[in-house]
Image 1: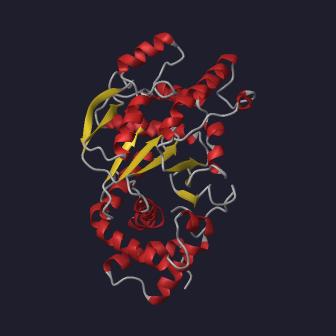
Image 2: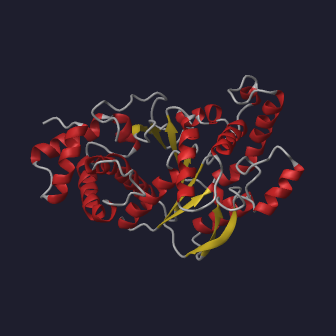
Image 3: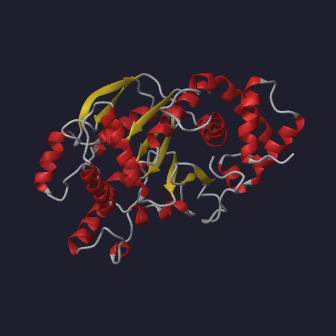
Length: 371
């Protein structure tokens, strides 16, 4: 039999309830897993290992599904059961398996960077990976670059020194030394570790640091953020930059932020691996950030207005424009270890490693699109 995406959606519920795939179904699911060579290489799946990968994945799916089935903080409520199972099967479970493999080769915690523009689903990805990796025996900690923001009072003083820093976000608004201290403690397993936390809702959406969270273990650290892993660009990159870097002042700001990014390189040096969530159009972050802010306000927390959010996102683009800074991470030789290309519904349309293959991978076939 030939296994299509629709067929996989139909079969996964039966595999959960019954004895598992029949012989012809195993052959089809193995063929599907190996059909996208770029994805298989990125996830460490070979002809020799594919059957054991899939058997472990099915065992994980069976053990996790009862606790995930109705968790709509991870899945949109409109998704069918088959769609939710397929996303787990094709994306989240194999990602967790790969992270567990990488961790098993180390004698210390794995620090996994996750980069994505605003709204790409970094926080959701961290939550689901934490759940899966716990089942695999790896206690996992989620940290955001936001957690290393300077306090509200410190950022107010910073703004008086440089009025261009009107919002949190750009290089210079983080306490890099604090980040270095925390990541060093985690890598060296100097538990307990005080993890700083940041509340975006206070001070009318300006946000401030809250009480730290004390953690006593962490085999894998998921360090996510909109600028995690970005590296400074040559000055020529700003000679004809994309919108909204328009005016002479805009270009000066972009160059200064590019220079300020140098201070973050010691922080990125702690990353063992880097994953990039890459939407087909970075401008989707406007729409996605609006949705996230609406959800936060629905919980009773204060937040930014729609007009302010639009200005906020454009401000991020002026500081470190995704059209300039992300493309170098999508191609060899120094690209990301994992790249997940996303459509406007957050569906993964391609998954590959920019360290292991040519820069323009073949998109997922129609039978696999929309995992």
